[in-house]
Image 1: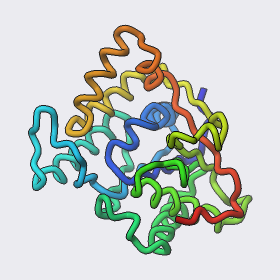
Image 2: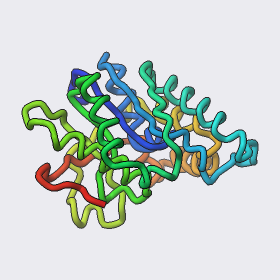
Image 3: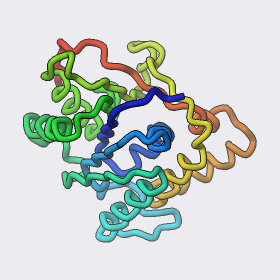
Length: 229
């Protein structure tokens, strides 16, 4: 059973970040009746894929990804979806203070008991890292007794070497269908991976089953340290 929260705030830079990493957890919270807000910073309009077979163009992709994001939110049961309007693949060049303030404004408005995002230094993509820094900076300036919990996704190659085993592992087996539907919603980006994943699930391949069995998170280790660049 996933621990009950007052309100959960999920912050990621791209449509589909939530589907791969936390859609089972999101669905589980919503099924428990926990209010949940998903703030997606960009539309992923610079995404590498245009469908397989191709059905999007560079010009049509932003609108397609907006629609896919809404469809994914519906699959998970998200009612409070925020599209924050930043530009894909440019978050590392946004003003650090403005990024932090954007996150802090969401926290002040929603008063979440839990924030979910990426772990700085272990999120691989520059947009992921910029988002993680903004979240940690917004949280670390809060008083410890007022600060929400922070569950972070980390998937760099050296994650377990440096951070150890995940601190939080959520069993999502009861919401496998919702997770797969959230991933299917982002079909312009996920077609090839879904084909391989669904085939692996049929034969119960251990690597494939990991995606629909549990979702793993780390808690931030030292709030006295600024994540830096």
